[in-house]
Amino acid sequence: MQEILDAIQSGASGEDIANLDVPESTRAAHVLRSEADMWEGVDSWDKDPRKSLHIGDIPLPEIAPDEAVIAVMASSINFNTVWTSIFEPLSTFGFLDRLGKESVWGARHAQDFHAVGSDASGVVLRTGSAVRNWHPGDRIVVHCNFVDDQDPSAHNDSMLAANQRIWGFETNYGGLADLAIVKANQLMPKPEHLTWEESAVNGLCASTSYRMLVGNHAGRMKQGDNVFIWGATGGIGAYATQLVLNGGGIPVGVVSSPERVKLLEAMGCESAIDRKAEGYKFWSDEHTQDEREWRRLGKKVRELIGEDPDIVFEHPGRNTMGASVFIAKKGGKIVTCAATSGYMIEYDNRHLWMKLKSIISSHFANYQEAWEMNRLIDKGAIQPVMSEVFDLEHSGAAALKVHHNEAEGKIGVLCLAPEAGLGITDPDKRERIGEDKITLYQRFARGEL
Ligand code: NAP
Image (cartoon, rainbow, N blue to C red; front, side, top):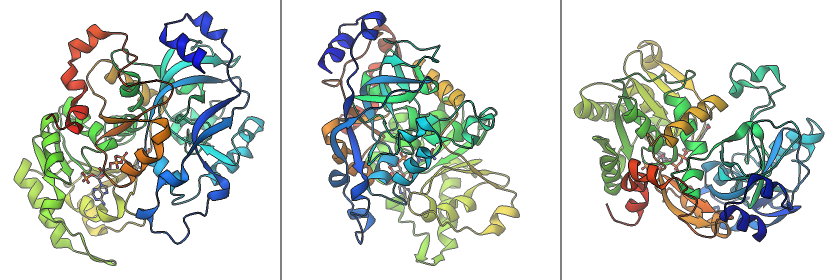
């Protein structure tokens, strides 16, 4: 592995990288099938990823003709790694077993370990015989849409492909590792003004927000749209806030502390709501929602921007969905991609149909959407929202922070990269875009705002 790292750091040619031996195993963050019921009887909140996410060697299989082996310089923590490590709502071994039954190549994924992680930046080491557009030595980032491009259903919108999966969550050999296996159609060029870790944190969250708000399949935000964003400094929310501002919309960001309000303001979001300070209690008991609290939130939005939201960016789920449906404007859209607080949701259907609102589902992004999002990052129009960096050995601690809503934006994870701050090959561009803009979340985490 040291030889690979030395070659990458010395800027070795593609030919030299192609001549390096690729090890048959890799260090990876993984959960074990034998521990899938380790949390029985434990409250969700108390399930600690540090105990279930192991860091150790796993064997790597032969790559399929449409795949590549990448050296992962950095990765990031996504909420799906939290789900895998707390084995909720399901053990992800079920996903691997289903993939295992599909084909000979699929069978490689059904193992007694699940190597997780749905983001990566790094360098291509090897490509399969059918890979045309990528070569050893290419500096890349990875998006996590894993589709079989020989499947006809993948060719309108690949998120509708019958066997669409999220890499590193529904497949094995994910990005929280020194080496990972990806399909060639997951690769995108690394923005060269960013460090390895800054470029690794964007793939999953930024592309998800792009599809939810900008792509053709969900929000289709227009200039001037009012967009209400839950968790506006969280993983997907922080990209949503930027996309709204970049696209000429008006964001109303919800967060849960005065510090996060300050961070939102520093991002240029003028209308912020501190949901904790406001003390919203949408559920008066486990079975009953309180419409007066929905009204109180709607009134707050009108006080801030004088209008109701055209789009509600929804992901907390059960706790907030009733309120989200209520506050959207007549004819407005509620775009949802998740349900962190519970997926059995309830809303008052009268507010939906009588006011002609729509609930639109969205899930990750297709290759084109992920590529378009990566291009915006490459152009410096959207910034990485990485607040801190952990090393791979401490991925469990990083996942715990995300699980407990203690992380701002995204947490980067160093895999092969020996330290933070490496990987910038276009310093002039970085200077043009502005160090302060790029590192806003890092400066916030250091208490420098
Ligand atoms: P995150 O970094 O933890 O941010 C989520 C934010 O939502 C939190 O910071 C919190 O902000 C807010 N929040 C959490 N619980 C809430 C509640 N009960 N009521 C109101 N606000 C709440 O997570 P993320 O990466 O943004 O992901 C959010 C969800 O989307 C997760 O469930 C994840 O699995 C899902 N997701 C889905 C996709 C997809 O493709 N379908 C992709 C990415 C993520 P404040 O406390 O500051 O308000």
